[in-house]
Image: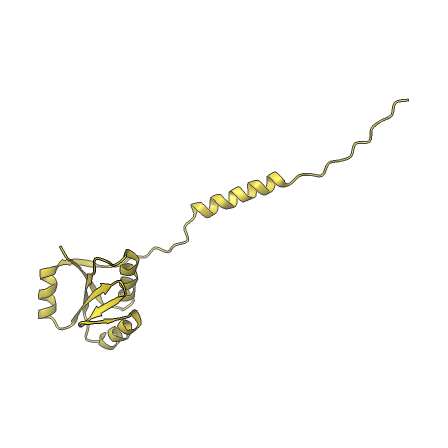
Length: 130
């Protein structure tokens, strides 16, 4: 008499499925971008043109972006104070001439330009120091 072995059914292993899902998740996280891109309308002028523009037109504000604030009329202010001062002068202000200190990081420049870009009708001139 031949005895038959009773085979136990193995449970399905989902370890490989978890590995595949993890790899897909990792791929999609690394291949997608979470940053937002935006456009800034900025015109570049030379240092001599900037000095002539600020002396001939009183409606252009000259600022210098510093690593720790913004120099406005020989006074260093933070972004909140700068925003309130631009809000107060916005009716008579036609443009802003922006100089950038050498120690300023690119993100600081972009943040300040985005702040200036939020004011409607304000022309932004970026001064080339060279």
